[in-house]
Image 1 (tube, rainbow, N blue to C red):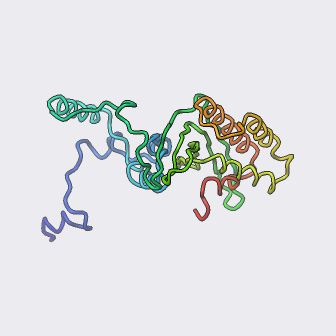
Image 2: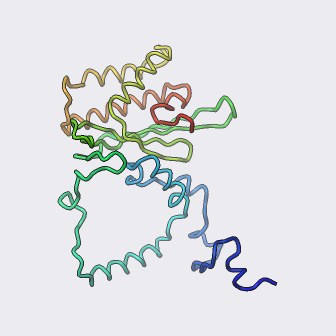
Image 3: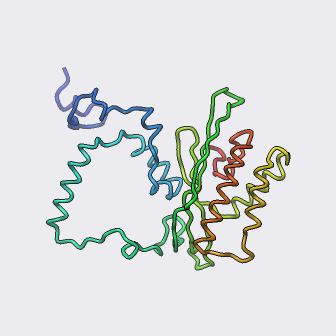
Length: 252
């Protein structure tokens, strides 16, 4: 028979203490359906694709913490903070440093705001290879103004959130990315198959300023028009592969 130490270290995992509750407790059951329907937090969507992939493989794959357990720890943290002598900084615009270097490329975020018009659209296709249904969801909930690490001119970026199957991810895209996507549609597909898409792009160009404008109201309008362009493209696209390059999914 195996010793207690051999049993506890089986598989190289070492000893761990069981959580409270029974294995059949719904609060601790890893439900695949619940995980598929879980919303990805905004702070994850705003991060790099590598960080998002890490979240989906770790925290995003774990069951949500039970509400009663969460309340217990929040009360404990509140008591500790109340008796602490550390200086507290409430998350406000004064505490946050919007010019802090952005991880990865060192760029500085000068402004970030939510779109007042953001909505999402979803469409499903049947795969020609395997016959399975595949779906895509697209929306643009936020925009930001960024100064490059080298001290160049600030520019605007738009957070494109997409859901492919059960995975939701976000990408910051510049206007040039949308322009390249529109050129691909104009040169690779029949014009009559993408009439609404071309019309939305023309509406965007009519509202475009002659010089680079980083005004809040203009960026909010531009965010809406770019989202409308993507919505029409989702509606008229024959397959989700149209977005492969735009979402940096080559080789995935």
